[in-house]
Length: 306
Image (cartoon, rainbow, N blue to C red; front, side, top):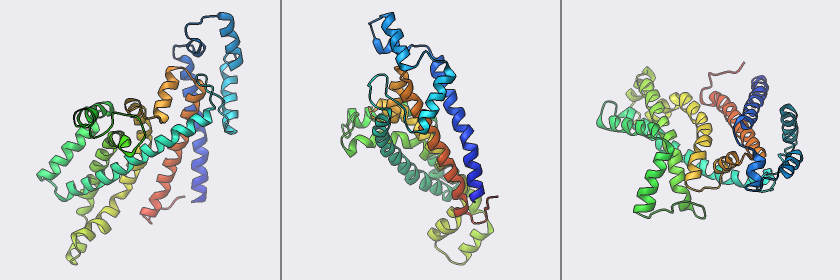
């Protein structure tokens, strides 16, 4: 196990470097001058040139990238071009909001998706199975911004049950969390149904039923436990999906998280903030994938890591 973890960590290093390098180069390829955006209507070429020199934008790209990596190793991402705040403070504040929203959406996806998949498998070829799969397909196909606008129109504008956006109370988090959790819940439902259908045909499940065990025990202890490998894989992959989906959802609901901060930073060509967000996202996704791989051994003791 220890050798496997070390190997995965060594593989993760070039992966993270590649992601940060691609994002770094892409920001410079995109049209738009961060200094011109920063100065607005004031087009003083001498001042702009001084500001570029002060920000280090006149240095070659490899020098800027090396500076970014070396500072990142010291957990120093500099200051935002736009707000002059420390990037660490901006990320820490936004991360708290994104963490709460992602956790709520993750819980919704598990609480809704796995029971829905089990229900569809148990009611195979019935109206319940068909209805669950139709709803799950809609949940996968509908883009998050469409779901967000529908929920806002029905529950915030027409019924006025929830606020239109912002923060301040638990009610503010419900609509964005539901929006973010619908697609992963639908994916979990389909994966769980597929795994349960395969497991329910196995001889050990028939033996458990022949012993007189209750339906609940058969489903939870014998069937569901043995189809969790693909479910865990999807659950781990959902972290990256939730982070990417939060970009749209947080912007629509004015939720001050990482997604909203990254959109504003990209539009303003605020390089330090964008680079910090990309690095943080890469670290989170790589770390989650490692934890998912290690969790396989706890779910299925037959799995061993060489």
